[in-house]
Length: 306
Image (cartoon, rainbow, N blue to C red):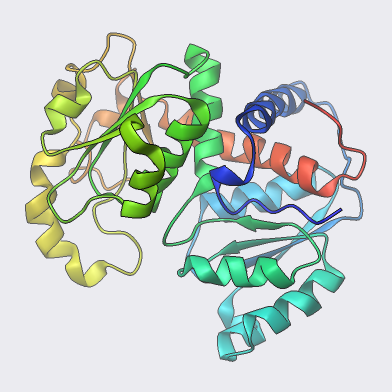
């Protein structure tokens, strides 16, 4: 059987994705009850980081350890990859020693090139195009708090970045409507919009996008690698700050999410994460549980849940 990767939400069927997040909820319950569950004993995850990380590193490393395995952290400074070893060559060698590889990188093509030569599952820990692991956590959080997201309306406010692209894929796979509010020139990638068809609407007015939304999400205005554009972005994105008052335009039972780190006073008002409608802390913790479900599915040969 050819090895399966997780590079995008589109790599799995909607049923498989729902199964994954339900499994994430079960694994969370096991951990909360202090039940030892170690299906990945003696398994090793290699983690390649070209971009800085807090939640991605912590959740994958802690997740592997909690499942009975180990994780090895590799930064470009520590590996030949940073000195120009061809990605395919690195993939052949690394996948002969590891049970799975998680990569957090800039160009999405680094992931696809690595996966093409890898004998073990490759997981996208974030690329310039997509952040699918975050979406697993977001979908798990919505399911826990509000039940099924199918048929609901989601608003994305701000930059049409990798997170926004992943929300577009999630809209297709989890069957919800997505309204994206962004300044002109900062739309999500046209390839993803084309894929989604009329499931996604791009608007200029954040209040219009917010109307009736059951879930609202945003992200920093300048992502890693865009620091030089920060000032120009500040001015353009100012009207897109999510505040308590803006959130009032959404549905009564709206949830607010942010993949963090948040810049308080920029994309969100200073007090927004303290609003009872915000589930950002629960969402952050769910990175651990959703990814444990993913690791179990990809690495445990005996896996047959869902």
